[in-house]
Length: 90
Image 1 (cartoon, rainbow, N blue to C red):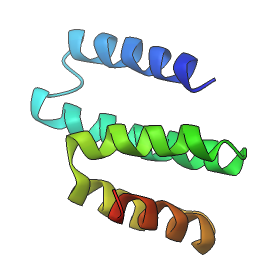
Image 2: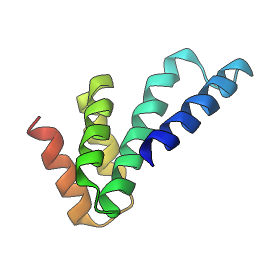
Image 3: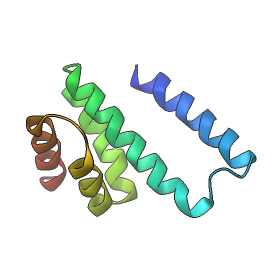
Image 4: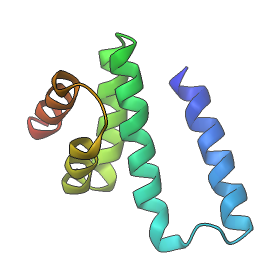
């Protein structure tokens, strides 16, 4: 499921860029936040290993900003803590 979501996201980004709706300097932040939110969805669904792969992708962009994105998530504290701990131990 995550692969389909990522494919759709990338198509949407391509379209948004073609219409000038996404600036090049904003692209990494948008992509990183998408990975974090999708990771949360995977954790909610019990697919922790997929969530971890998505968090790794987010961290490849910026580990520090990934932690900031996790802190801003609207979710249960246990999910936020699980994700934060995973990122901090990578």
